[in-house]
Image (tube, rainbow over all chains, first blue to last red; front, top):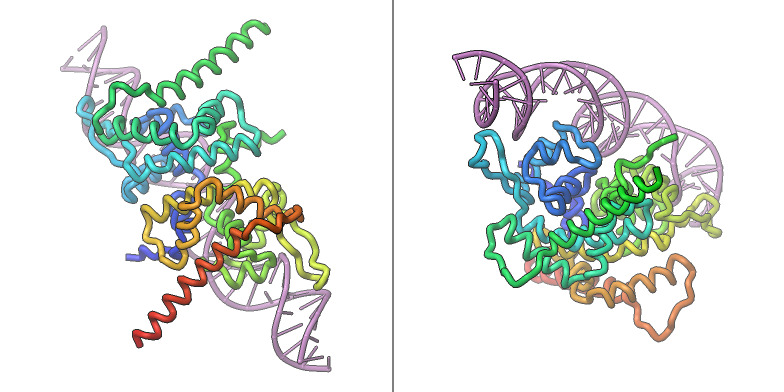
Length: 172
Length: 172
DNA sequence: TTCAACTGATTGCTTTTTGCAACTGGTTTA
DNA sequence: TAAACCAGTTGCAAAAAGCAATCAGTTGAA
């Protein structure tokens, strides 16, 4: 019953839900990596999240409405985690955080190419991306005319990875 | 050699610096409340920060370049904390967090009026506000023609406070 | 039918961080 | 000269994070 928040300030309340070192990482991997199962999130984790922390965060994010969980019909134990409207609307925050990190922190090229595209694309691109996430996660109808932002982000990322791998080979 | 960071992802790096429950609260109070001294930050804290946590965060934020500290010439013990370019550029993140919090969390009217103005003003207003913070915190030259965004945010906040106080009086 | 690999977690343990209240040593003001 | 003010610090308990090993049910191939 102690759903007592520290204050009614919108920034504080956002921080009370997302202000820890892992919640946004989990949402980021679901959003940009399209990782939907526990194992995918655990084993592909760039930052090496521990299984108990992941389990705790998934549970908490579902409780708070930032994720939903449904059973995977192909495997009785598998759950599929999806974004909700609440977490899809975090796209602008991710974009601004990515832009800030790119400007001030020692980012790697591979892991920041998507942030760069989001920054350059601006709000119109964010809106397209959010529409696409609604299709992917909320079973919203897809507009077949629109090219996929998700695929563009993915392609740009893979291109950088391939280019760097080729450069590394050539240098050997 | 300390492999300091978990990954080179810009979102992760931003989170490693700001991803806790107090860092952004401290910066918010300096930015929007213009609180520049330890006691001001401690005693006016809406969320009730503890003195040891405040001391630790101020120290850490100065070390990481998000705040600067100088001595107050009027009092030998007083320090003046100022924003840096790095923290001034958090304005878009604060604006987006405020917008998200207003949409999805149980915010109070008083504490969200400023977030509302920032959201409605959009990026042009954010740029004006950042210019103003540079004048206030980085000793940048002031453009006397520009009306102060800081004052507008402050006035809107005080107006809501006054209106609600009057309504409370009338109800007695 | 059996068994190895895979599924989403859980357990036990240690380290780190947070939260709280009291306290410190120095400074300014009345 | 005493009270109020200043920026913190200290000691301790509780909570959270981090790590490695483990769990029991499910699946698919031999």
